[in-house]
Length: 188
Image (cartoon, rainbow, N blue to C red):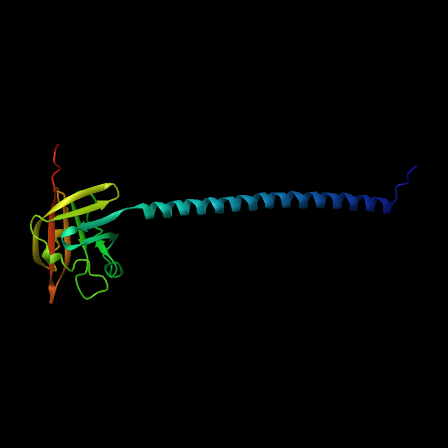
């Protein structure tokens, strides 16, 4: 009935190849589309994670409050020049909660001079410190002048204390050092 010719075989092979080619393209398209969807979902998930981390970082509380000199401000990690020009800075090599917590700031000649009145602090004055959930009150024990090479004041101690350091006016080789000891909790 049907006569198979060379032309018929060619058309049959052509249609079979065309169908296979179409099926392959449809499969690739679906795979690429699925893969693109995964990529987009991953990007959205990563952005959600980044936003959540950013929110967590903003929720971190790190501050110092000294009512006697009307100081209540946040603390920044690292005593780089850039950080000191805008905030009170934490010496990275010191503790943040237990032991010796050391901070530095400018006292004059800059846009922000948070430790300008540090010289007014006297033995018995209170300093409040907070690092996230860690909240402590410290009592000033010393307000002294030290050499700029005296780094012993930054060493860790078993006793919980705050060490505040700033420059001394017109004395480039000296620093003012205020040390405060953790106030004992009152038992009720």
